[in-house]
Amino acid sequence: MIRVGDLDVTFGRGRRAVRAVQGVSFAVQAGEIFGIVGESGSGKSTVLNVLCGLNRRWRGTVAIDGEAQSPQRSRAFYKKVQMVFQDPYGSLHPRHTVDRILSESVAIHGLGQTERRVLQALEEVGLGSTFRFRYPHQLSGGQRQRVAIARALILEPRIILLDEPTSALDVSVQAEVLNLLTRLQRTRELTYILVSHDLAVVGHMCRRIAVMNRGITVEELGVETLRRQTPEHPYTRQLLNASRGYDRKAANNIEEFDANLS
Image 1 (tube, rainbow, N blue to C red):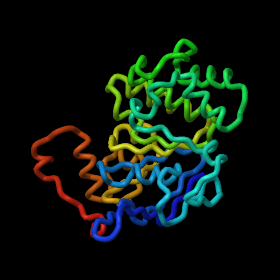
Image 2 (cartoon, rainbow, N blue to C red):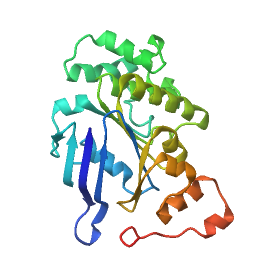
Image 3 (cartoon, helix red, strand yellow):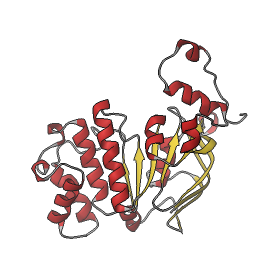
């Protein structure tokens, strides 16, 4: 369903140029949940921005459902691929009601049956019709993220890109949203790419995981390897140690990995 080959993304020019993504390649099967993990600045979100068409300055190959993609994407592409962003506070227009936020996508793509689609999308994410004419400031963080998920679902895509979908939420709400995403993936047979710095989240949802460090994929592993805590690359082992919580000894032993040399 998704194939990425030798993806390169550079920000800036000359001496100030930064290669945010370097030679990243992976493939995702239809109906799979594929995870990308790494610390902040590792290039995870940049990969998603290329896949969804937000970043048009890249080199390499990107294919979606067997069709090669150029930096400029068609309207049909956005009906097939949707994205849920990290910040539910910033991804919804503050002066638009939930109804308008959801209806806008339907109108742009000329799908028709707007009311039915809006109500169905709200029901699917567990909100219901009572939320239809509320504004984002009248919703909790978890409710806003459910609206963002409904906005992605309303076009009936086959692929959803998830950029840290629970990191801005309270811990008590994170599990609810993750369970919702898991249920929707199964019922709709969706393909997900889930970006996260949280190994517990990725281990809960994904079967395969790519680990990124400084723009490079240092390792690709199955979730069972992650659960056994037996990755091959020392950077991945360091992420595992960090995921257990603060430990003074572990903190003192943190190393800086040069992805080009490791």
